[in-house]
Image 1 (tube, rainbow, N blue to C red):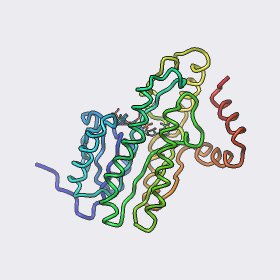
Image 2: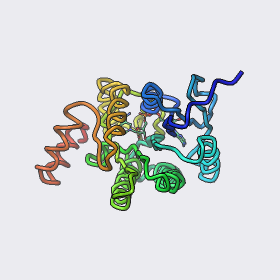
Image 3: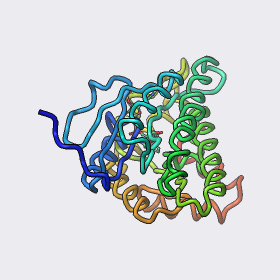
Length: 276
Ligand SMILES: NC(=O)c1ccc[n+]([C@@H]2O[C@H](COP(=O)([O-])OP(=O)(O)OC[C@H]3O[C@@H](n4cnc5c(N)ncnc54)[C@H](OP(=O)(O)O)[C@@H]3O)[C@@H](O)[C@H]2O)c1
């Protein structure tokens, strides 16, 4: 027998990249906060069944397929979501010259163009109801680009700029656009990173940067802490930037970056990553 449907007052959320890490923690936190949640993975079999949760197969490398999957879920949710969390993403590591163009273009398409496509599909119903939130998960890399992750940095910076542009347009509509920027978080992100030919195993220089990157993730906050910040941001319901992570990365470093010169920030970031 099917479980009873939640009432019309239940809030409904769509979360991409829900099979692990930050996305899985977002799903848990939203379910605990009373939301009905549609969560995605490229293979929906990776998503554990639980009350109030709907598993969706969605691959951002297939834009048309992603659109169909989102629209079907939105119809299933009664025609509108209260919250869209664009969380899915992945890294490609290695110097720009060694990354095949197709790998770079696919990453930008998935993490920028197709991610925005989902927001464009969710927005009309949110506007019509006069409430909702588009949450785009970007990164502290918007402010501190990660060496060896040029495509990732560019996609996140572009997504951040788009989100803040949208925020202007949504003034007074009751719909929020949130640029959600985590610092390092202890998730399986690194194991999914695509290594360019001279990436982590490419010799002293990039090998050192990669080891530094891994060491930072080992001591980073757990995704549950990041999910608490998301739920708080949704309660506030305001557009803008939300930084989440360790005190140093989410509070101190952005403040110091605003006070320092671009050259100083570059030198500090290169030192931080042991880039010699
Ligand atoms: N971890 C960090 O330190 C950190 C810091 C700042 C920002 N972020 C951002 O936070 C988000 C979540 O990262 P995470 O750390 O939780 O990484 P993760 O554990 O590797 O999770 C990434 C999620 O994205 C999904 N995904 C990957 N490629 C996809 C594609 N082509 N189409 C659809 N879904 C795809 C994965 O699902 P399947 O593989 O099951 O399909 C998985 O559920 C990402 O946008 C990441 O850039 C992470």
